[in-house]
Image (tube, rainbow, N blue to C red; front, side, top):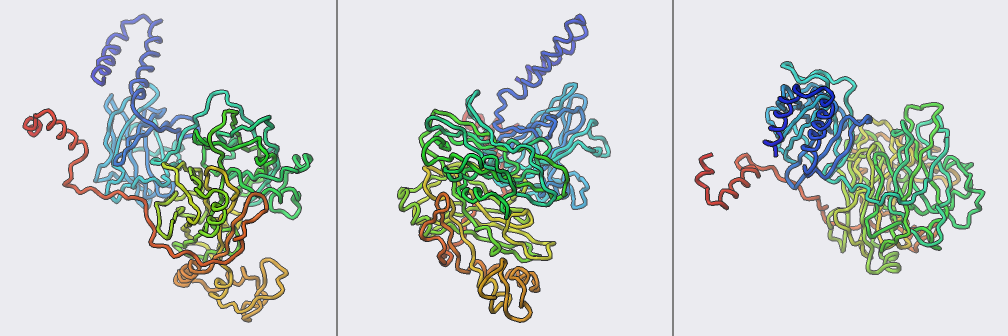
Length: 630
């Protein structure tokens, strides 16, 4: 095919000048069409995305268990750059730069040092596959091993990857690549776990739940709530896809959106209620909206349910009214911002086999969840306890439920999250994990294989944080400077279990800093300390901040908290609870965690897979001697 393509290029070039002018534009069209078709059609790239907001930088990729191959198509005739960054910035990034000069493609493996200086990598691990250029675009394809054992390269795993990109109108010169200027950017994605694209029939009905001209307050964090009525249907339907409707330009303002099911007996006059959530003056009707129906977070591109599962509407137990909670993250304190973001829900009368449900697991959001300052790493654990799953699933679904997707959620201090799964004290492979958690990229991950969750199983949502640079305690709470540690599980068939969480009891945490007695009766929140004298008349949060934390003390505190009894949260839909809720239990004794399968560096003496394949073919055709002479 490539030899034929080269012949066509030569033929077109030699005959172009002989054509009449009126036919030249037609030839240009067909040669452009051939240019893209010959390097896109049949290429086998299963995944694709657009990296820049103007649609000029297209990325395609495919992978197997050992290697990954990229194809980039960029609107430039100069160089193109592609890289993998530890944090989205240039420093310490793994970079490849290439282009086409005088019809010949080139590619070089680079890295950026701690001072962001770009240097050629001695170990060239990116392999050029092909490259072409026309009057407007450059196409380059290249591959590399997922694990290169090169300290200047970044391993590619199933965790979040921060892709950085750049391009220039000029090719790389003798002195290296010129500065790209504004033609650069970053995008967080999961290269080895990209999820599934929307696969719904064109013309599928949908309805929107959308705020209209909400004045975003002049403050760092706002949770804005409004009650909506679900689309009325005469019979049961299934919602099969939910996608965000984020107002253009507000992609970094809208951090996440939650949908809660409300009391079905609400007065319809409440539909006009729009107010700041968790506010003393918010409508009382907001308090009836407890059961989570769906969650979307920043960076997510929407979620399509598997073909055998849907979110039910139209039956007696389905949502009639929902509360949409939008988290606005406004650290720059922008003024005069008005937002009209929301969600679009696609629904169909063609019912799937199962109704989907959502369980919120992890650490119960509370001030009792606290992180000391100055810690390089601090670990929190939220337990979905054996006792809660035994009672709820034992009564509702003794054969268990099947988890098919997970959304892991934390805030700015979060660095890694995993949802660990145990059965009879034996740890199974994690339900989900992300060792490179990005606050600005949180979406549901479809599991490669659905996981059976049985009565008596238990889950631990494990969150790793860093609080370096912070002077005071970080508290469990709603703002982005506060913290959360949650996993939202999508599963089927739906059962009456909304939350399965835990919280370390507070007494042991207070004893660690020397608190002897609190003021009683408790009349304020946070409650007040009575003794010792140095904490007298301080709230417990003020006392925690006053304590002289060090790295050593912080580590000891962390080890102690992980052994404390935990308060169980095990709630049904609405405001009902399972009987186990509110009890104190000991954290389970678990064997060491099972880490996801890891790749091992290949020794330099081990032949590359391409060499192995060639040798195998040689054996097949009994021409070993000929091959050895190549």
